[in-house]
Image (cartoon, rainbow, N blue to C red; front, side, top):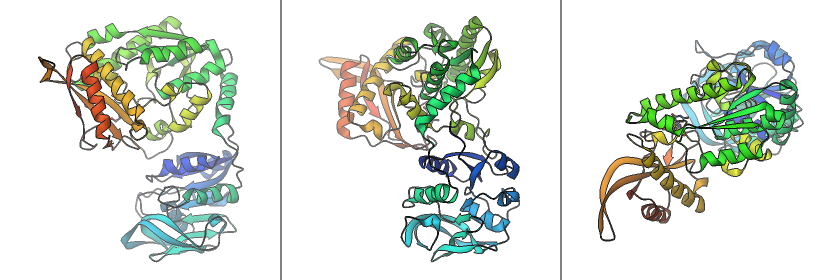
Length: 511
Ligand code: XMP
């Protein structure tokens, strides 16, 4: 990967931090989010061409406010401070920050003066302001380059030293042409050429993996999800049959899913592919279990056992491949300091497989970048565009106890639902959509017969991060067609309902 043009983004825990990274990469400049307390020495060592300080919820005067190594200002590279980042720069360099009585929030008309940062803009621009503290007086060598009626310093610069501060959030869509501010910074101020492209990622990563692994052997737990599929595809390209993919089919996948994975990885790829058909094992373990958390636990443990048994047959491998992606790294706190959540992809399998090292070729990429790489490697759209699917699979979408019969009913109904939503293009709006087989039975009438069968629930949500989600507004006509098809085509379902609860208070999954 072409990393010689690196921008480092110092994380001060702002909610838009990942978005800043996304935007910089959209300018075709490679960047990484790093801890806010990274040393100036390290920044220098990594050869960063510029540094961006993110926003953050703290006040610079607060006791535990995150600070930066002040030596960063002596390296001689440009710095852009956004919101809290601008306040911290001001404070660190001897200016003054104050707390306003009222928070300034919303899309605001910002008056822009002369600055390279504003190339391509007129003398005003709508920008998103979201702050309570504000810069009251500037450090030496700085000038005001923008203001709003309630913010005397909406942007500042020290042209000689190439230090810039913006109080507004250039990274969000609410700021008109916000990306241009960042593009000006990384290219015109930091001097990056903007030649980093996703298309070169696959090629360079394959070469780097080949060099690193040589004749070594690698093992990959392939789930059929986007991340593990793309990671496996990179390794397949790099080391061919020295990679073995183990695909544990627990029998809880959606219709045709197991075969689709096998079709790509088992037939088209050079790597060794082992599909373990473990449905029976899982169903025996799950028989009579209706508690969701117990289901999850059983599936997790059984998965590990099956994988371990297969891995043992292969013996010692040099590398274990994981499909960890950038948000996993950031979320689990391995990339930066202040985050809390642990993630199942990071530090999951390694404990029980005999290997030398983990390779995580997608560690630096965002999800849609992973999809782009997948496409370049020839993975079909149905795998690359796959919506998120929980590890425990349909086991948590059959409410109550699980049987093969119920799973088959659900698979057929879920397939129809997905097919119809995709036909009407609603999949572009819904980020996750699936059917749930409830354990409610109700009375119906079909022809001359009374039926007493299952009620199926449909769920579709629109969300950016799955932490919160709104139910997708599916048109009635689509719902009607889905319902008619399911009741007609899938035996044992006589009633279909649509879940109109958002998250919170509900979760996306029913169990
Ligand atoms: P909830 O139901 O918590 O789901 O609102 C949020 C997202 O997480 C997925 N999910 C899971 N993924 N193992 C997983 O790998 C699980 O046990 C699990 N439970 C929920 C869910 O599909 C949604 O995308």
